Image 1: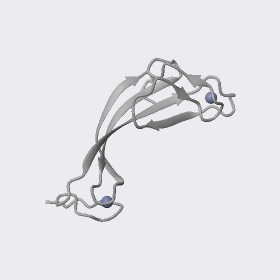
Image 2: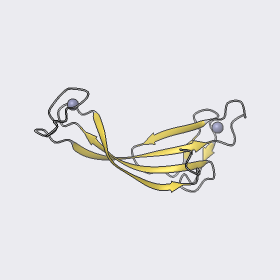
Image 3: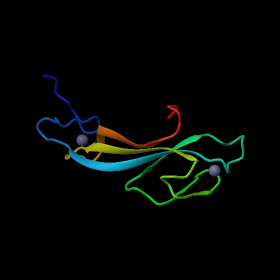
Length: 104
Ligand SMILES: [Zn+2]
Ligand SMILES: [Zn+2]
């Protein structure tokens, strides 16, 4: 049986099972950005949020779950190492929204 080790501190994750923590990622493509600076961005948030702010131009994207510039919303279940507290893996991914056509 393969032993999984924490990539950060090397603790044996079978002996010290990681905690799980939910986080959310939003994939955006902001239409308010100037075309030469527009790109796909992935914003991580600890909880679901009502609005996002474009880190490039500062435009407000709301509601975050339904704004046309928000292409993907994912709920991630992270594994958090109990020894060092780092996120050492992703246990599950649930797509809450995907209008990217599979590009993100
Ligand atoms: Zn660790
Ligand atoms: Zn923008």
